[in-house]
Amino acid sequence: GESVGLHLPTLSVQEGDNSIINCAYSNSASDYFIWYKQESGKGPQFIIDIRSNMDKRQGQRVTVLLNKTVKHLSLQIAATQPGDSAVYFCAGPNQAGTALIFGKGTTLSVSS
Amino acid sequence: NAGVMQNPRHLVRRRGQEARLRCSPMKGHSHVYWYRQLPEEGLKFMVYLQKENIIDESGMPKERFSAEFPKEGPSILRIQQVVRGDSAAYFCASSPPTAAEPYEQYFGPGTRLTVT
Image 1 (cartoon, chains in turn yellow, orange):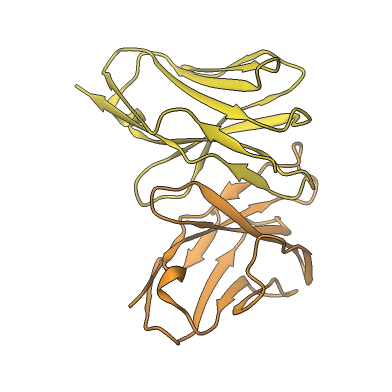
Image 2 (cartoon, helix red, strand yellow; image 1 turned 60 degrees about the vertical axis):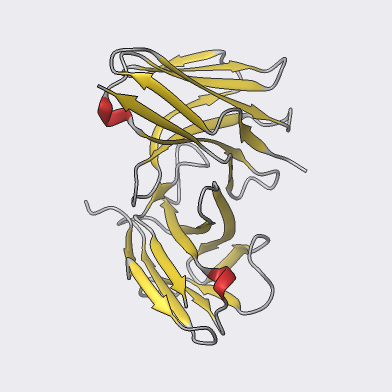
């Protein structure tokens, strides 16, 4: 079946470092991916998305890279701040196109 | 413009009781999605509804769970005869009828259900 998954459950970085969070997916027909940030006790918050006709998309301090050959995407956070500490999920559409499939999440911890 | 509202934020039920979770979508949104999140897990899709219609309920258990989104009022996720395994965070998301992206979903803060 289709799946979206993250490589590492936890990532610890120092404030000011760049963070890279990775995600793999199984459905080569997936055409859209989203990264969400979830802080403790809150719902997922949209960060950035990318369509499969793109390799890279940049936002404010965040960049998403998509490698369709190996079915892998990554979220890069520049100059990581303590406020970036959260669980990060990649998500993609299910085959029916009616909902999102989420990976398990990577917990990012930023120390000062 | 208020975001997606969910209530209650925390709900405690004894085994065998019923749980009712409410979701008010963002203003102008007519599509509602319910997801469940177990501890240390990602969100799992349960059901997708439009006003008065269930579009996809493939992720919802066949027994004890039901969902509705009436013409007026919030969407309701109902769990009958709750068991300990139902303890989880339940998130609602909504999207507008003409979303620029088909997965332009905005999430509420969730309801944390604890079954004792």
